[in-house]
Amino acid sequence: MELTVYHIPALLEPTVAGLAIKPSGTYVDVTYGGGGHSRAILEHLGKHGRLFGMDQDLDAWQNRLADERFTFVHGNFAYLKNFMRYYGVTTVDGILADLGVSFHHFDDASRGFSFRNDAPLDMRMNNHAQLDASQVVATYDEQQLADVLYLYGELRQSRRLAATIVKARAEQPILTTGRLTEVVTPLLKRTQEKKELSLVFQALRIEVNGELEALKHLLAQALELLPVGGRLAIITYHSLEDRMVKNFIRTGNIEGKAEKDFYGHLHSPLRAVNNRVITPSAEEMERNPRSRSAKLRIAERIAD
Image 1 (cartoon, rainbow, N blue to C red):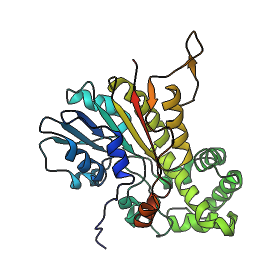
Image 2 (cartoon, helix red, strand yellow; image 1 turned 45 degrees about the vertical axis):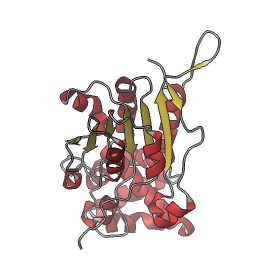
Image 3 (cartoon, rainbow, N blue to C red; image 1 turned 90 degrees about the vertical axis):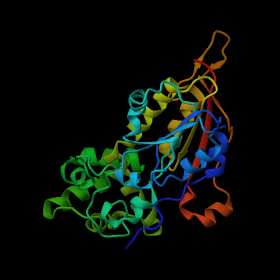
């Protein structure tokens, strides 16, 4: 089956508006994917503007924009500062991250991101990475698996799930999404089966790709790359990411530990541009149902 839609960008207009794009500025879309957000950013740039589109999945390279102002960067955004240094860039006027999984990853059954298709249990966003989901399921001990499922899937029955997986893999290797689904489904609530299956797959995907650690590095580097007035726009899709971003914008660190000055005023190097999180409109959710869990937070650098 030919894949005709790589990804439909969520919250496109408020994201681009929130970046407050300067025509001659330098911007980075660290989750390039299908290039939807990047195309919109380029429309606001002048001839001296510059845009870097970054993605760790080389499949995204096929969607690169033929524009002299645009540079495609193959890499993980956890190393954003190093890549920018390579291109001679020390500051950027805006950073955009759409942390959701591309339609391409969900719809390409061979990538193993979805329980809706029986496929190799993979889940690597960078298909050249060594660790895949089948290795996590096959080699992590029961406690490690329980931790992954609890921390990244927030599944209350994480210990039972881990024990069941360990028992099942001893009888037969769990190498496909179908086999994993078969193993864990009896432990899930019938009324929430799809939701809980999604959380099992989410947890494994986060572990395989080191997603939360990468986000932590990205946020820290944003403070080093953004000048005063620079903007950070991040779209999240689950509470773990959103909590990190919210804390970071409010306090300058992902733990949410507030630093106060002598007078007791909260000190943060960032200012929230949108005091309330931005979510898709009813029209957008109808047009793009996968955007329903998207949350956009925008911040501006206000101090060194």
